[in-house]
Image (cartoon, rainbow, N blue to C red; front, side):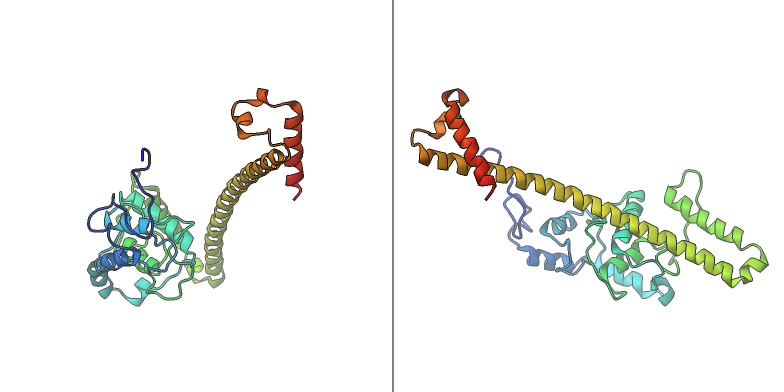
Length: 276
């Protein structure tokens, strides 16, 4: 049929997919990919067939399983210990920005659709991938970096400039020996840092609420139009039962073929149906 050549994506493949995937359902496709790449659990939010096809075509960031395991062998506990806020949405947003800075594809998830809502272990997909991506700890999510980052310059990405700016600021404030020994001052700086991270999380929540409000507004408008359409149809059907001379052709051929009495009767029935 013209205009319907491309079938919508479903849990199963469709003829336009590659031969390797078109006959696989979602679970079979996941199993094939997970033998080579480190993927989130299949039941995680956002693990759709569309996401898996992006992994298959290398259209989103993917980590080979063996590469990740070799990388993690040399990690110390300090390199995997998290010090950032456990906010997956904020971490996804920062990682996507970091990947973009490096000219790499995104994670395949946005900040409003992270792969996992609640994570309690260091073996979670998002944290392991974050440690692999951010080895120099630019995002300051882990306690220690795995490798040292090259110093920034005027042409460096803003992420690098902010990172080194924070390091220089810390050295400046603690250049005085009394400041380095002042526990209360150190706690104040830490409180400011935590408050700023909390602010970023709240701003993300606000962004999410705005997105949800926009989606809810659009859905409400769609429902309103649908209800009005149903009311019009029911009112016309009821009016045609009252007067068999009223047929759909009267509306199709234009309102000039309808008397004022018929139009008033249909309008009255619409108003009555809207009260139901």
